[in-house]
Image (cartoon, rainbow, N blue to C red; front, side, top):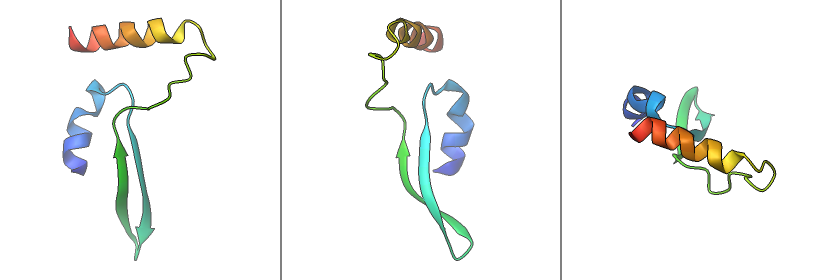
Length: 59
Protein backbone atom coordinates (compact mmCIF):
# COMPACT_ATOMS: atom_id res chain seq x y z
CA UNK A 1 0.00 0.00 0.00
CA UNK A 2 2.88 2.41 0.67
CA UNK A 3 4.06 2.26 -2.93
CA UNK A 4 0.56 3.09 -4.22
CA UNK A 5 0.24 6.09 -1.89
CA UNK A 6 3.74 7.27 -2.79
CA UNK A 7 3.12 6.95 -6.52
CA UNK A 8 0.00 9.10 -6.40
CA UNK A 9 0.74 11.50 -3.54
CA UNK A 10 1.21 14.47 -5.88
CA UNK A 11 -2.45 14.16 -6.91
CA UNK A 12 -3.75 14.09 -3.34
CA UNK A 13 -4.75 17.31 -1.62
CA UNK A 14 -4.65 15.88 1.89
CA UNK A 15 -3.03 12.64 3.06
CA UNK A 16 -2.29 11.46 6.59
CA UNK A 17 -0.52 8.21 7.44
CA UNK A 18 -0.55 7.19 11.10
CA UNK A 19 1.48 4.37 12.50
CA UNK A 20 4.14 3.35 14.96
CA UNK A 21 7.44 1.59 15.03
CA UNK A 22 7.33 -2.02 16.17
CA UNK A 23 10.64 -3.89 16.35
CA UNK A 24 12.21 -1.19 14.17
CA UNK A 25 9.58 -1.52 11.42
CA UNK A 26 6.92 1.10 10.67
CA UNK A 27 3.46 -0.40 11.04
CA UNK A 28 0.67 1.46 9.28
CA UNK A 29 -2.35 1.93 11.53
CA UNK A 30 -4.42 4.37 9.50
CA UNK A 31 -4.26 5.89 6.04
CA UNK A 32 -6.55 8.89 5.71
CA UNK A 33 -7.02 10.38 2.26
CA UNK A 34 -9.38 13.16 3.32
CA UNK A 35 -9.66 15.27 6.44
CA UNK A 36 -13.20 14.97 7.86
CA UNK A 37 -12.99 18.47 9.35
CA UNK A 38 -11.21 21.05 7.19
CA UNK A 39 -11.55 24.02 9.59
CA UNK A 40 -13.27 26.12 6.91
CA UNK A 41 -15.17 28.06 9.59
CA UNK A 42 -11.84 29.41 10.84
CA UNK A 43 -10.81 30.76 7.42
CA UNK A 44 -13.74 31.99 5.31
CA UNK A 45 -11.82 31.73 2.01
CA UNK A 46 -10.56 28.21 2.76
CA UNK A 47 -13.56 26.43 1.23
CA UNK A 48 -13.21 28.32 -2.03
CA UNK A 49 -9.43 27.69 -2.17
CA UNK A 50 -9.96 23.99 -1.48
CA UNK A 51 -12.65 23.75 -4.17
CA UNK A 52 -10.34 25.51 -6.64
CA UNK A 53 -7.55 23.06 -5.80
CA UNK A 54 -9.90 20.13 -6.40
CA UNK A 55 -10.90 21.59 -9.77
CA UNK A 56 -7.25 22.06 -10.78
CA UNK A 57 -6.52 18.47 -9.80
CA UNK A 58 -9.42 16.73 -11.52
CA UNK A 59 -10.04 18.92 -14.54
